[in-house]
Length: 337
Image (cartoon, rainbow, N blue to C red; front, side, top):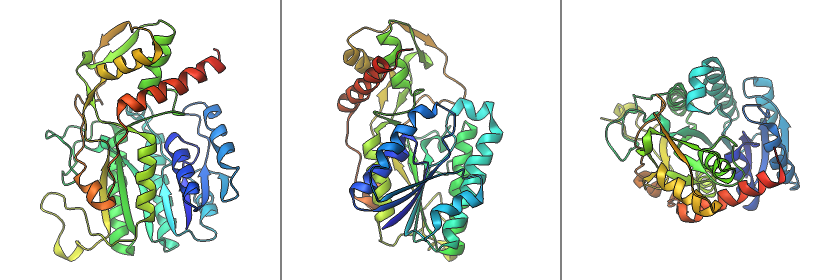
C-alpha cells in the first residue's frame, strides 16, 4: 500500500512511519518541523526513516492546501493524519494556532483524502475529548461534550468533521483517541522526561494535583501498531453509536472512534516511583494544584478497540518506563546543557 502520512517527524508519527516501512508499505510523508519543541529532536527521526527507499519526505504545512497536495500525487491507498498542535495549557495560551492547525489543517487533509477517493482515513484524536465526563472508564458511546481544554475541543471538532465526510463521500474515517502516550525518543516536555531530568539532576519535581491524579499510560510502539492496523483494515464498519445513536438513514456512514490506551489506571506517583528506580535516585517532590484543563482521573474502555482491530496495547509501565528513562538519560548525557 501507499500511505500518505502527516506529522512524520513527530514522536508518534515517526514510530508509525517506521512500523509502516517494516510492514512493506510505501510512505509519502509531510511535516513542517514546527518549533513547538526543538526541531533538533525531529530531524534525526526523518534522517533514520529516509534510509528506506520506500520513504519520501516533503517539508510542508497542513495549513497550506498546496503543501498537502504534495503527498497525494500519486493518490495514496490510505491517509494517516497525525500532524497537530498539542498541549492542554498551550491551547489556552495560543488558541489561534490550535484552531488553524487542528481544525483548518485537518479540514485541508481530509478534503484532499476525499477528493483522491482514498479508502481509509485514520487520524489522531485524543482522550482529552472526554474532559469532564463523569463516568469511568471512558467509552466511545459517551457524547464527549465536556472537553476541558481547547485542545480537546479541537479534537472533538475533528471527529464531527470526519463524520460529515464519512457520510457525504463514503470515506472510511477512524479517529483514534490517544490517551497518555509515552516512550523513547519523545517530546522533551513529556512528564516522564521532566521527572527523569529533575531526579537525575537532584532538582525538585512538581507533582500536579497533589499526587491524586491517575492516568491511562500507553506505550508509543503499541500506539503505532494500532494506527497501522486501522490504516490496513478492509472490513466494513458503521457509525460508532453515541447516546441513542444516529438516525437510521445515516447509521451506515463508515465513521468510528476508538480509544487507544491500556485500560489500566496508573497514578502519577507510581510513575515517579518507576522513574526513581530507573534513575537510581529518590525524588524531591513538590505538590502543586492541577492545571484547570487537567482531569483528576482518566481510564479508557478498550472493548471497541479489541472488537475492531483485534489488538489491545500490552506494554506495561514496568517495562515501558525504564525504556523511556534509559533513552532520555542517554540523551541528557550526550547533550549537556
